[in-house]
Image (cartoon, rainbow over all chains, first blue to last red):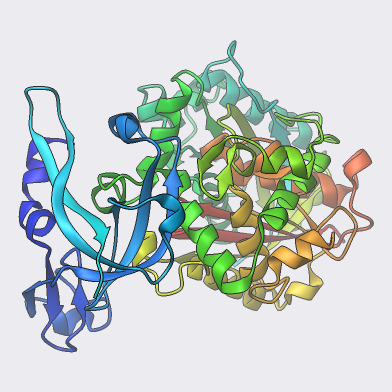
Length: 134
Length: 387
């Protein structure tokens, strides 16, 4: 991914900053400029909203044929997680064996290395999830 | 709006066509369709080409005029249509609208994709570019993994089983065994499908459609003129298109395709038909789970009943509703931007009664269902036997 394309979204990827529609209160991640519910009324009426970082697994898979950049991790677990604020994200699920994963499992997001451009190039960071007890 | 007919169809072999380039594939399909319609080529007023990713797969953009040029009709206006794996179906819809509106009379709609000039790994990564690259792929999602997560959700919500998923592949391979253009014209067994190497749990290699080269084309004209051409006509009675959130995680119910439901609803409304009126359907089965969701979302079976219906044989050739008589993307093959037109070719062959061993008994209506990516776009066509 080109550097500017990644750089533009550092705030969101590193800190989990989404957006909230001031008209209806709905929260979005990644942030949206327009609320799909309120549309015109939400334009220029969206505020930043930082996710707490906790949620639960909605569905998951174990990937055995990854893209080249993730080959070293294969097989790895990918999940769709519903954050406590109601938004859903896709990300790696780590620190857990695949056969222990289940839908509804509580998880927390943490910033981790996702990949790198080249050995001396830009390192991409983003969130991954791991199980928590709470 | 005018009624629209298909008066000619053409298709290449689907498979790993090492000796053929994209332009050759496109031309072969198009010229076969023109020949079938009894046209020379200079009658053509407009060409639409469905193609998903020539830019990435063969480093060539602007392919519609390229194909027109090499087909010997270089002056004919041409446009490429892209909507991920629904590119072919969307191109057909544009052709339909051009004729229905009265803007053009003779329109050729072709679809072509050349996927094997890059390695399999690269081709699969290019398929994944129909994901939300920034919020799915960067975080580790492959195209198959998104469908795998949809499949798990469907299994947990409705009790769908791996046996039921496998049965989709078994049925479609059985149909492909009767289709000479299919990439994999041979049968398989449930055990073989279930024991194939894992791609993204619960989907194994035999739950996935292949990487393919291939093309297909149709010739359209106003229905009122259809009988003046050589090719046996078939009517396009309606179309419907739908959309959904791009990323799977954005969808409230990730195992229902809102785009498919909306497209089907519009197509049924416009034709005043119900799902019960449809005799056969070519549905988008890039993964086994996708066919199960499609037959539910198109209204053929209740939500959650797609798996059991498949297991009971209700979607086999000449059962309750014949699904993917061609072998589908799974076994006929997946030249990705062309599949919507491969579906159209199969439906015309069926409605003309020319499908041989895989012929549906006396069909009146056939439905085509083509989706882009993980379902952010969908297009449905309903075709009727000429009367």
